[in-house]
Length: 397
Ligand SMILES: [Zn+2]
Image (cartoon, protein in one colour):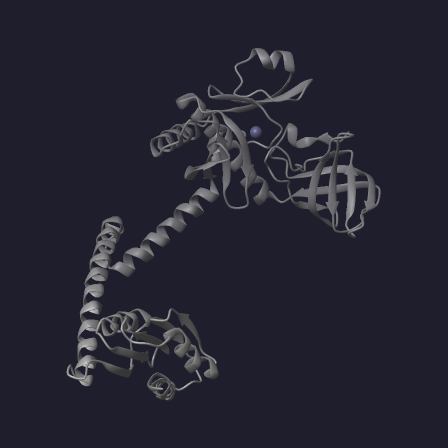
């Protein structure tokens, strides 16, 4: 059973140990067991440490529960005998900050609102706790954040002790664990007591700022995202830069961004309404101009026309107005959009869907619709005006 040095000292960065065994794995890496280790194995929602064992680099550390050994997976072989272990300190300190911050945050949610934490995950960028609560609203987030940060500012002592389960059960611990026998009790003076095997700060001040981020419903619980210490500083810096970029883009101060965005969205909605109205008016006028060409006296006719611009929506609007006139058949297109619409009035014979397919398919175009109204697209290589000439022949047939 490996002696766990991190149990009594989370701040141990280097340690001497003896290599008891080193076995090669099928993937080429090696599994090393030591008599003692300061490397934390993945457990309790916290990922393993990284670092070096002699000349070898650690890639993974896990707790082999069958025999209580901690297994270090390394990238090279190690001879039996003494070895120096070196912890990747930046990663360890980051984990200490996130993990200790989690204790403070879980205690804060419990003290303030009686929301117990059911699970914890320390992620690469964001950490989360799942709360058992009827709902978690912004007020809960802000108050828990304030209380947890107050505990950081108080710089409370964090004490680790080993106690029998029966004794721990009698104490006011936040959440009892399933483990039997001797438990490792982590106490944050005057704030929290929790059995836990992770790596914690010595004082709450070392956690640094605790920043709550998103909250969302997740599998029946409320998942709260948070960052602590250096991560909180990086997140705040990132927010500042994003908000600054938005403010510069709009040309206003940072504080005005929400109001300006709301105003711009309202303007966009109103501009969209205006644009729709104008497009409708334009379609109406274009249709009237095309209808004027065939003249009212002839009682209808065939209209073939290519617009330089206009999308499928514009063509549909024009075509609908043309087909509203008795006796009219129309094939219209947009040169820029390579779109086609074929339409006819109800009192005219002919299958527009078939006609459109007959015209577009030989050129590699696609489309379809009903006997009265069909639309399609020509490929880039096809000439829109040539296709419309074919449409005239087809419709006049
Ligand atoms: Zn812990």
